[in-house]
Amino acid sequence: MEEQNPVQEKTNKLPAWLITVTPLSKALAMILFIALPFLGFYLGIQYQQKITIPTPTVTVNPTNTPSPTVTYTPLINTNNSESVHKMV
Image (cartoon, rainbow, N blue to C red; front, side, top):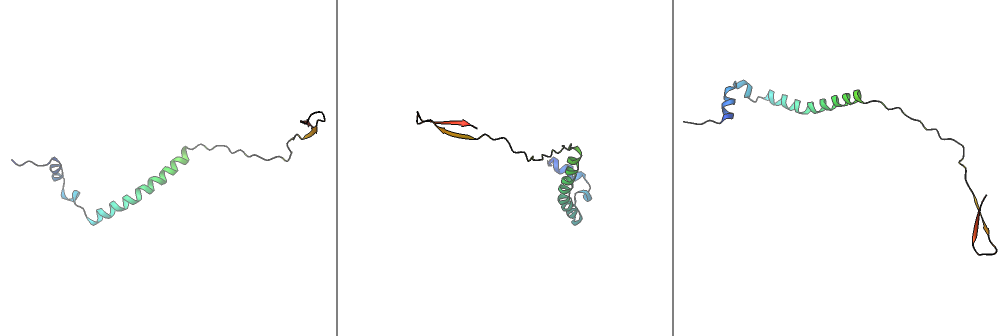
């Protein structure tokens, strides 16, 4: 008895026109191989825009009011050689 590969048995059951590689089938496969990723990318962008919730924008306007500053005037203590700082 001759044993056949199970894969060969399945392919032998299919008609020849389904398993024959033609120039048209090669061209169609190449076009689909290139076009489908671009189509998927475009559809993904459209889907993301539909599900994204827009966030409100916050505008910060700077004020012209100067911030309060503290100036220090050094005072020299005549009794000691230490410097004493006084807040003005």
